[in-house]
Length: 126
Image (cartoon, rainbow, N blue to C red; front, side, top):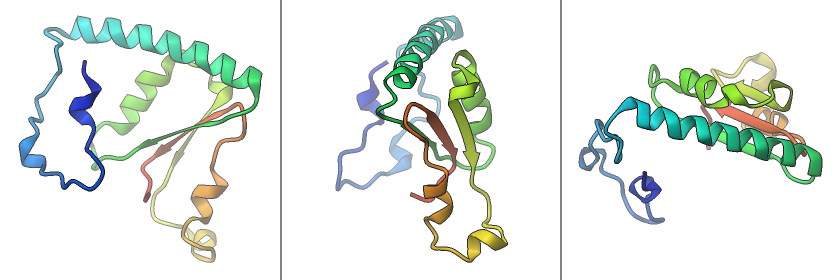
């Protein structure tokens, strides 16, 4: 799959009507995509071990999509092969009373991953 299909150059406007929602890349069957996903999951688990061992950097993954777009299922499926002790998933719904008392970035900055760890933001306002 060519990731350039999904990259929007800085400063350009996006017209969603120009994108085919049924686009599946070069995959002709679900089994092809699943095999590649499993290989990527193994590689992600390996990189997670390195990230933890070096304890120098952190990884933040942000999922942004419409309601019912499959964010939860995608996160669960893609991260199924990593060590759950090194990953935290944070969902951002409407701010609660405590969060409203702070700057609007307070709750997301509070949830950033520590060195050696991964955090997934399930929705964000960035």
